[in-house]
Amino acid sequence: MIVVEDLELSVGAFHLSDIDLEVSRGEYLVIMGPSGSGKTLLLQTIAGIRKPSRGRIIIDGVDVTFLPPELRGLSLLPQNYALFPHMRVHDNIAYGLKVRGFPKNIIDQKVEEIADLLDISRILDRFPRNLSGGERQRVALARALIIQPKALLLDEPTVSLDPELRDKARMLIKKLHEKLRFTAIHVTHDISETIMLADRVAFMYAGKILRIGLVDEILRSPEIAKYYGDLNILRVQVSNGSVKLLGITFPVNLSDGTYLAVFRPEDVVVGDGAIVGVVEDLELKGPIIRLSLKIDGFLINAYVTRGLGEALALKRGCELPLNLIRSLIRFHPVSKW
Image (cartoon, helix red, strand yellow):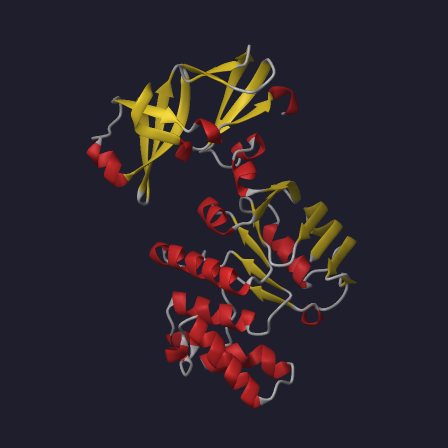
């Protein structure tokens, strides 16, 4: 287990403050937040690259706050992968075992095993300059995992990959975690990456962790909407056990009062339903189209695939039937926010 207690750190005018975090053994924790929120700085502090001005970092019951990185038992996978350019792939992967004094026969055996797992056995004799972005990432993962670290720290590990490789890389990381069950702390600003990989999410902004919880809790939280604009947040009134939302009324198990109804664009089912929306705007986002829909005086976001968009002949001003997946709507009392 990794425990961060009351951590503070200043770098120039930027401050990490009041950071408390626990990561269980085998858990995949994603630290999510916009650029400049302090995610990488926190990761570097856990790794030992930076020293806090206050607080403690405890790994498996041992206070490592002021131990150097090499004595913490962690592996850091930086954005640029930091492969040694003068070493072949085999030697890059083997480096951590070599400096720990493992005999050559054991090193070769372990390199072969991890290379087979990551499907890079065929490139063991190549230099990093002769590898694709996806291959460099696999080599960096192999080097990080071969020492069987207490935790793997990943700093935006897919950000330098082409879009078509990004999903493959995420799936690779997910499969590796399912197979090896290593503890991971993964930094990203990408919601898709968070959804695919996270057991839990810590959301950061301006050097603070604003909220920690399950993916669903975080991505449907009003606190997050100001940083990720696709989230739908509508003020509604609950009366006598029912709520009117987007022109339809349905029962809810809530006390009377004013609430924020929070739901994500993928919770809107487009093409069928009793709700009618007018397309105000369309935005292509890879294979997805984000729709801005005017409904009952509200403007909401919804996602459709490009294929469905073409089938529905979507354009500004057209009317669309739609529905909400009610079980995914979260209601938050206005008094809390």
